Length: 479
Image 1 (cartoon, helix red, strand yellow):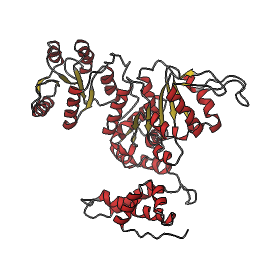
Image 2 (cartoon, rainbow, N blue to C red):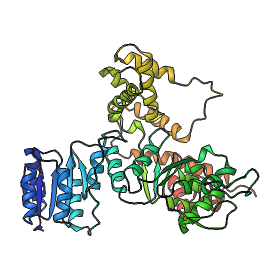
Image 3 (cartoon, one colour):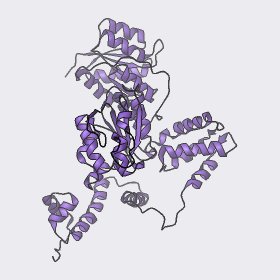
C-alpha cells in the first residue's frame, strides 16, 4: 500500500541520502532529500513534509540546532536525528531539544523504517525546551551498540521523573548512570543523595532513610534528618537495593504507594518529594522466589529497567575507556601515557571480572609505575597477572552454577572440530540441564510429583509431561 506522506531528509553524505531515499521510497513514502540545513529549513517553513530525518553535522548548520526551531514553527512535525558522533551527549541533546528519536550511524534500515512508522503514528507529546548543556562533559563512555541503547534510554528519561531500576555487575557504572539521570534531568537543581543499603547496619536503615525523632531509640539524643528529607526536590539513589532488609522494604513500599513517610518515632506525615533511582548487582527475581525481596516493591521500583552490560560484552569500547581513564589519571597528577596496539589487543583479551572499575585501576597503575610514555603488551600482561588473586582451593570462592555451566559449555564449544553445531544447540543445552534438575527434584521429594512441581515452580501437569518426554524413572519413596 502506498503512503502519501512526505519525508524530508537532510544529510551531506550523498550515499546516505541515496540509501534513505531508496529505502523510504520502497516503503511507499515520498522523499525530498537535501545536503544542507538551510534547504531543509526552507522546506519546513513552507509547510512541506510530514517527518524530518536530519544529520547532526552539516556544512552550513548543526542539525541539532534546527530541532527546537522546527518545533517552534511546527510543533507537530516529528524530527529524527542521525549522527556518527554517537556519544551520550548527542543522544541527550537530541532528546532535550525535542527530537522524536536519535539513531547512531551506521544505522539499521529496518530499525529506521520502524522509527519512521512510529513517528508518523504516535500521538503528540509535550516538547522539551531547548537547553544548553554547558559543554561536552561526558558522564558515560562508549560507542558500542549496547551503550548506544543506554544513551537513548537515559536521554529519554531526563525529561521525566519515572522511577528507574539499574542492574549490572559491580564496576559497570550504575552510579554514573544514576548521576546522569539527575544531572541532566528536571531535578538537576536539587540534591543528589546516595545511600548504599549494603553498607548500613540493618537496624539503622529505617532511621537513615526516613530520619528519627528525639528519643525514638537509645542514643537518639536529637532529631535526625533522613535521606528522603535530604533529597527533597532532587534524586534519591538507593544503591544495592537487593540488600535492604524486609522491614525497611515494607516501609519503602508504603512511601512509594502513598507519596509520604513518617520518621522513626514520628507521627506527622512528610511528603516524599524525590525521584527514586535504585540499583543492584543481584538477581531480584531470584531473591523474590527465595522470599528475600518483596515482589510488589520490585514492580514499584522497576518502572523503567536499565541493564548495564559488563565490559566483556562491549570490548569495542575498551580503547575509548582506556584513553579516558589515562586522561583522568593525567588530570590527577600522574604522568601522561599511551597504549600501543598490542597493549590494546591484550586488554581486549581479558575477561574483566571487575568491569570498567578494574580497567580504570589498571590504567592508574600503568601511569604511576611505568616510566615509558608508550605502554606495551608486556606491561599490561604483567599487571593483569599481578592483580589476579592467588588463593588456595580452601580459600577460593565456591564455583557458581553459572560459572560451572559456562566452563562446561566452553569445553564443549572448543571440542568442536568443524565449528558449532548448525542446529539445536540451545535446545540441547536446556535438555542437558533439565534432565538432572528434574531428577534431583524428584529424588529430594522422594518421588512426590506435587511437591517436586512446587519445588521447581512448575504446574503439576507440566512436570508430568516433562517426565514422559525425558523418560525419567519415578519411584515413590516410603513415607
